[in-house]
Length: 127
Image (cartoon, rainbow, N blue to C red):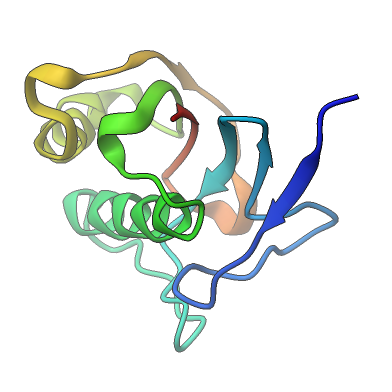
């Protein structure tokens, strides 16, 4: 059985349920969905979709770094959004973090996300 290591960082929001920020198995990091919570204050940032997406991406970045990786290691993302009409704005911010080296992904509109946020993104990264 491969070794499983739990990844935790104070630079991203603490889990709000029975899960971890990320799990490293061999050379693969599975990053739980991140939302726009300021890890220092616990405050949600949901008033502007671009700002909200920036918070999500910064939280993803913090978890990746805690696992000794960065966005260049990401091979797959899942994006969950509450309103597909906001897709282009979310995509604009998301794209700045990857450029031409974008991973595989899907984007799904859902009825409700944790804490009624507008966007949640998870990732899989490989060393």
